[in-house]
Length: 322
Figure 1: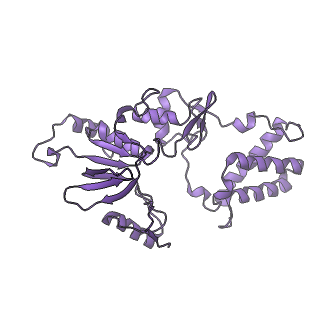
Figure 2: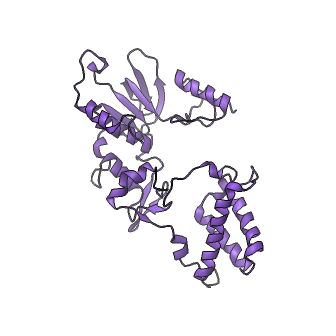
Figure 3: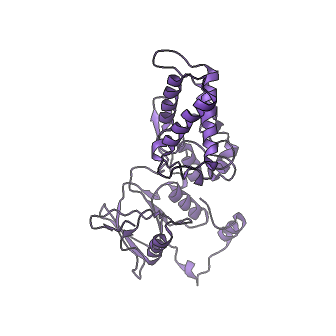
């Protein structure tokens, strides 16, 4: 989410007059497919560095991608991205840390009231003991022999009861069962995550539960595009086309790439920026660089770098699952 240039070089580039006898003789028309955080950041960086002929095509009716904050009564609910997860090396945190819009919520689960269906409230000491037990299980995972087929939720439940039998026999087992069941519901998708690969994700150091106070993650989008409540698109105002589903791209025309959208419109662009995410190999008429990525995935099993997963949606698309 940023320029490949240093800030100093970027400033020099903005101040430098573009030579008329170079590729800059004509202002390039740049199209970005997708109005998620990556697409927005790309557009902002381009416009900041003097490229004004930039457009974003977004198939949905909003920007933000996985950032989706909804108004709920007098509050906001994040349906997608929620926490700023870590501080050191986290680009989101670095962008907003001086604005005083984040607060820590590491102890949220300890500070809420845990009430059983019969009306009994769990004591703070019991809640803290069981939460500490779960935290211990998390960090012991790095050194444990884990079944590759086990989900994260299955592993935590199994180890929770095992540790209870070893060191926490004084805890009521029925209460513990209700607690771990509720905890997994709060966490959401523990049954969908692999326990074996859990620690392949390396979190940033620092607080892992920084919330956006009463504004939601959408506040980050406003900061990113330099917008506000009256102009949520900020410096990208009039640069974003919503509800535009791309159905065809002609890459190899000598007059530039042509993009056809579901609204029956066609646009010609010199450069197209596309977020690529390769998950399964798909037989599509892609440009040479995308075919190269697919071949790389077939040979190595994974993609490392900024380009990953082209998604294809087409009635005549043939999948080669490999």
